[in-house]
Length: 350
Image (cartoon, rainbow, N blue to C red; front, side, top):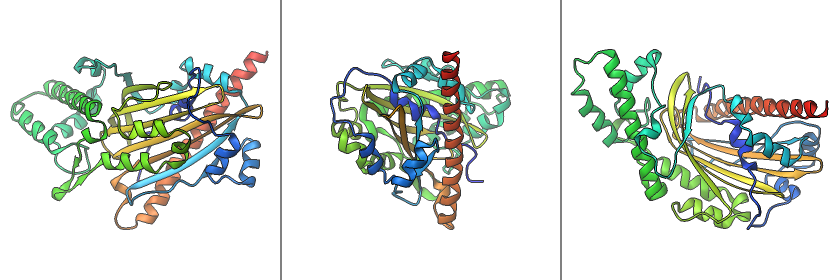
């Protein structure tokens, strides 16, 4: 199996709809958005009948999986905004172990709830013994620092090993956060692989941000700030950093996420990048949006995830399998969101 569950939470989809007073940029009409994504008359009819449809998103390398999806929710945009503000989407994150926002003054204590538990002792030990390869996404200096730590834990018991692994991982997460906040994409250290090779999430994320032309056409200032972060974002933007501990391929993994949202009464856009992922894939880039559509809301989003698992021999088959697994998970979460919104509307009407 290529993937168990990739980290594509439904809140990435609807997170685009947070409310802000105004748009500084031009907002596409629903018809323009549908045209931009190559969604023709037949699929528009399917959307209007409540179907979830896919649209093509070009892949930029052998390591990338890309997919776009859209649906129309029979709920007005303000109601979806209210639903999100109440935190109701977090209930759909069945694979989420823990998460927390990261403030501007984040320090090691900001990660105190990130931890391997007693049942994940083997994973913690494997982390302490990490080598170049794809079992863990770590830079050469990070692996070297783990080797130095190992020398001090030669006779340590399991409790001490678990504590040491958790503390070390928190330190790595903090250093990666600080490096990204200081230098943006240039601050992302590559992952060390076997035979002296590396995986470069910084290049992947830069390419993803550059190639996303449809949203860049309507939000050029946002795209440039996103590419050149920490260049200041447009004034009508809000941003959030957070860490997550999520089960991916039945293993806990740390994720560092940067999100930016711009929204108003005429629609919204949300962009997100996972600039550090502990294992299984290298990076993820999401562009999502919501637009009023007749009596409801047109919601669309695309995701690009880069993973070494789909490169090499039988790459075409691996891509097909990977896309299908991602698609199934996205549809399941969209269906759950739609069901929750309808249930809420029904309760209000009683």
